[in-house]
Image 1: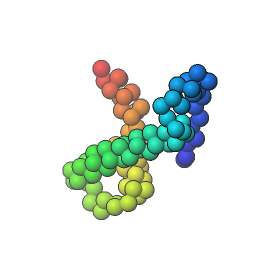
Image 2: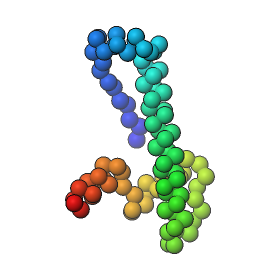
Image 3: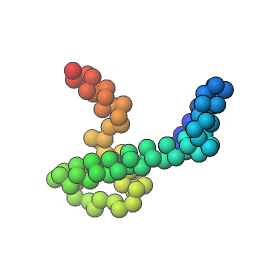
Length: 92
């Protein structure tokens, strides 16, 4: 599932951004790429540790991103951020 995100920036805010940025779209793309890279690093670190500490998991840990993400997101104990937040709110 790929997602397309569209944002609307007012004329005034566009002028504000262009006073600081050469190209708004390039900046947005770079910001999203940076967030993806940081999220990937955290996910990989967190789940590698969880998989290594899971005695019931005996398969090799995939070395490529797509296979790693597919493995992790298919697990019963995987939760998205929204799911983790909802579970925490319910527990409180």
